[in-house]
Length: 61
Image (cartoon, rainbow, N blue to C red; front, side, top):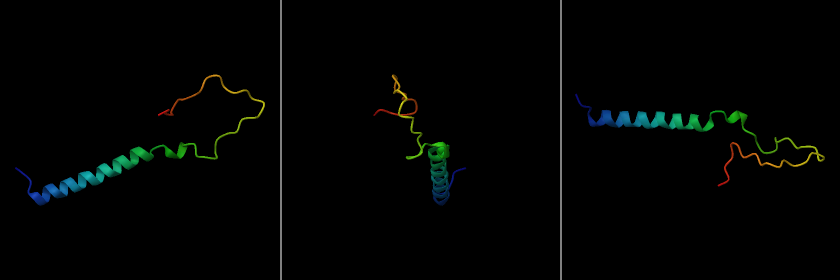
């Protein structure tokens, strides 16, 4: 049993559509917990700087 050309096109369109939804979900999943500009805590001025830079979750490239 093989699919006709219109059936293959429909199947391809549906797969691309759902792939787009999956990619969009993967990109935005958990984004409500992201730290937005202006929301970062400002430390008190008498607090010394950290000696070790915390780079978890950030890239340097």
